[in-house]
Image (cartoon, rainbow, N blue to C red; front, side, top):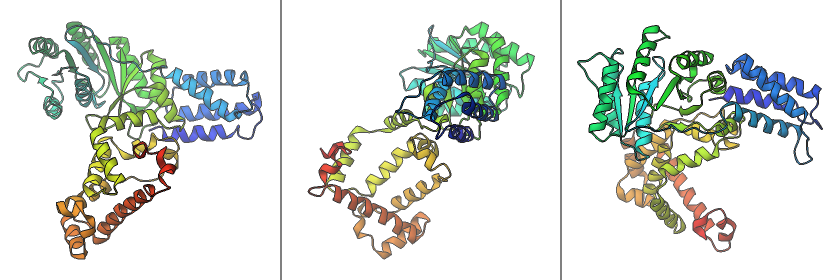
Length: 442
């Protein structure tokens, strides 16, 4: 996500390196490069031009203090303008009525059905009792898909197999929610491959019949500038409340995220980053601006970690590390915690400095699965006391996990190195050097 844009912006900022101050001359090329980078990322040309004109005006009028360079000052100005362009702050869904109704709109293939389940899961964790309503009566297996997704997150789905009237299904779904104490209704609607009058009239009729408190336009961010044009057409018809960008983890240039608010004057409320049903986040303009400028997003990283953080388990691990008793059971638990946080490459890109340094590295998620298979092929005693694993046991573990003896040896070596490192950190005279970094050692 935004990798090409990030790289091109970094090249643009290099123009000002070594300059003593910002002038009309040295900033002209930089603005030209930034504008070209934005257009290449599918940002609307007029928006890109207005954006760089505003930056130029502020940059030339800014005072460069001794503590920072002109390049650093320009990055700060670009950051502020990006945040402003994308909406300044996060915008939550507004709940009104009992039940509250969220109506999803968008073209076929934008990811509405999966998003409906993601939103249901998201708000269920926040204490809501959601109901999914299946109003896509045209796409083959659409109703079955949402039922499967609902089962996965333990959220009920309302559908009517013998009725092909989406408006009636939506109204009946709301009545069903009222009688079953569900305080949030999420309506999944039909889409088309392109905007068509019948689809637009149908969803407008659903809006009139259900009076939703929130209408969200769901758009596939990989459609680039077309996403902005489609958003405008839907907004003209529905006057929706906000936008959800899906598939931001794919091969997207990201221009829609930068353009869409300016064109339709409606905020981006959520971003969806994958197929997993917990892969949804509120859209924070300041965090997105940081990622676009290659500064990472440590706040989102910490929030993801907190969702899988088990305080009691952490204390147990700390105690075992302190006593040099960390074993394969502990390593397996830690690996599973990390996997819950999401795609490894996306996680690393959130860490300032690390993402840039490792941008060309490939992260094979299967490698974690291989390590897990090796550990699970051990006996409980072997996991607890790895030192008993001899040559015969190593062969058995390799055969049982479908890996090689070399891979088993490598894992054993890694655990041994972790133990030796912790032993050194707990040695007399060394504790103080690490105490400020490791709170559990205080």
